[in-house]
Length: 537
Image 1 (cartoon, rainbow, N blue to C red):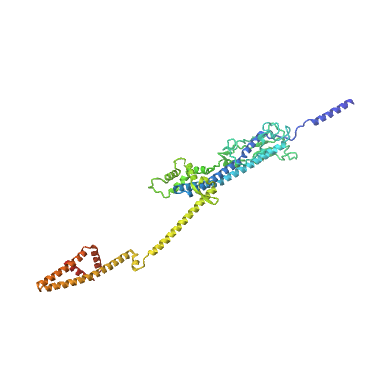
Image 2 (cartoon, rainbow, N blue to C red; image 1 turned 30 degrees about the horizontal axis):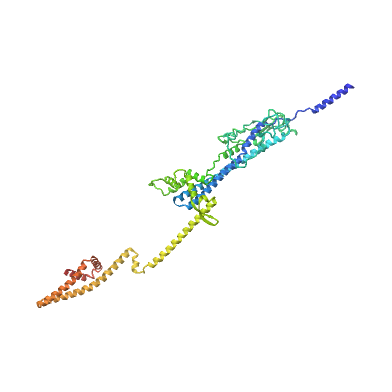
């Protein structure tokens, strides 16, 4: 009886102890190795910086456009107030700045595509990896060293927790503020992403800690998570799991991404190929350097010889092969003359622009100021507008003065205009004018000869009468004849000065000849008489 009681007590103690002893975990498999998952977290850390770098690159482009636009406004304002070749150089600087801004804007289309593609794909991959890590941490929470699906990175005998920075990518923060990034060989190379070499992700220590990938048999079973043996892919194919019809998974593999590209371009059908190409496009974006402000922008377009190229093109329009200097040489000398130096032309010309006096409107009042005192592109545009209006007003005043002068000239000309006559009408034609002049000369000569003819006719008549008397007197007394000869001598002496004056006066002889030419036949008798008179003289 006593022995029976002891046996019963022993059995009860054994049953109690059996209930208290730890039992082996059934239907469990390998946990993920923390060090392998940490490589995925390194990739997310790199990808999370891409948006910040993309924003910085776009802002750099925006600053370049702003600087070039403000430079254009300032240079145009200076050109409007300047004159001579200084105006031309300032206008060329404004045009070069505008060209830089236009090129930058034109290049933004392709750059925006690269930015959106890289940041979008990066965010997608970060989300995949973060969710996987978060899930593994959640199912392992509180497991200690008993049950877990993700080990620590440095200790595979214990479940992952928040103590390791390497595995905190489930809380990855994406950078959305402008932050330039230096791409290193640890982040991305011409071959791929070196932080993801790939390989087996099964823990060699925690081999029976996670039920997640256990498969009890090849048949479907409610106690199994996977109902059918085979290979599954997760996070876009980056993680591959193979389950078999036994308690252990065939593989937990992370696909390697360090050799997915050649010469900076992803090979076809790569898991992260599109992401890789987008990252390379973002990395290789080269912005147009238009400067960061007016000074650096002016210096940039001049030192890069953009202004010189514009001046050369303008000067080449009227150039010839006989010019002593080429258009390029003339452009260079023009820049040097305006700058007042042969070195650091950009800095010197910007100083000239700053010191240019221009009309500025403030509180409704226009005053002369140096451009350095007129701040901002809007004010520079207002200054340009002021000078444009002034130029238009000056042109209007000049046009009015020209119109007034033209009107006054027309009135004066009308007052001086002679009365319309046949002579004036004829004189408009050079040939007819000569005819009219000859007719006038003929009329004048004819009038003079008519007067002379009358006088000489009277003199000839008197002379003939005297001659007759003289001949008649030859038969009279000697005293009477002597008196007649004396009277005849006095008459002859009176005629001699008249005809000598005719013979010795070229002008009168010309008039006589001209008149005779037009009256040849009608005046033959008078000409004969004059010849006879001329001989007597």
